[in-house]
Amino acid sequence: MRIATWNINSVRLRWPLLKALDAALAPDVLCLQETKCPDEFFPRAEIEALGFPHIAAKGMKGYNGVAILSRVPMQVIEDAPDWCARGDCRHLVALLDAPGGPIELHDFYVPAGGDIPDREANPKFAHKLDFVAEATAWTATRAPTRRRVLVGDLNIAPLEHDVWSHKQLLDVVSHTPIEVDAMARWMEQGQWHDAVRHFVPASEKLYSWWSYRARDWAAADRGRRLDHIWVSDDLRGKLQRQHILREARGWEKASDHVPVMVELAK
Image (cartoon, rainbow, N blue to C red; front, top):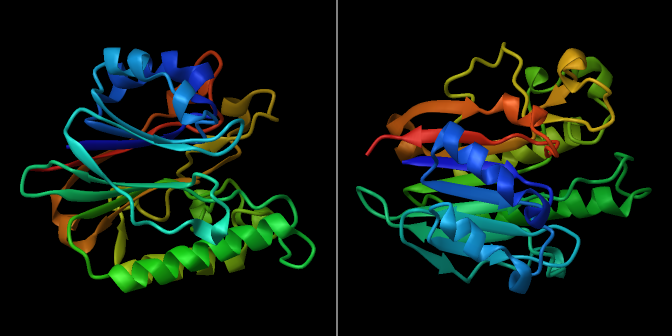
């Protein structure tokens, strides 16, 4: 089973790019973030025509939003919290009909956190830290649950080589020590395993996001790995490969994120 994640940065604007994504990765399940689309305007018919008959979406106008597109049957689970009591459409949970038994799939879009890495000076950063703390606490109440996958734009680049310059980005939101520590606690409490780094040593540079501000993103190559796929420990032995679709950053009308995929054996 191939499970992919992509911050599409507006599903109504970029849904035609899903055809290129499908040609490159052929995912069985694709999780989207930042769909920026109320549910009634989600392009269901167009996406179903691409070969994803099972669709779950939780969206709002202009901001946030998550969706799960699947070729396999799934059941949406409605018991997830309203994170930080904001109702801002940042998490979907579904049970996938998978060989060997259902897989509990979480699609997350963690707040970006603004520009200032200070809880008191920046309410957006406080929201980000509170969101991750709540997710960590909720995960701890559910662990150890088997056959789980968590994906999404988590807006944190945790490792030294998940950013283009560890030293220069230590005080930049997404790579600050407080965020990295918060992510480590989330992973530890949930007994999560980093499915992408399972295949790529921590000593190698690895990115999934490049800023729109760079005139030539590929030449500058100032990326960050903000998009993640985690699996429960019992699925670690099922991991077969990973793929970060770097070329998607060069597509016409590209998102600033690129798709990330892992493949699980049956």
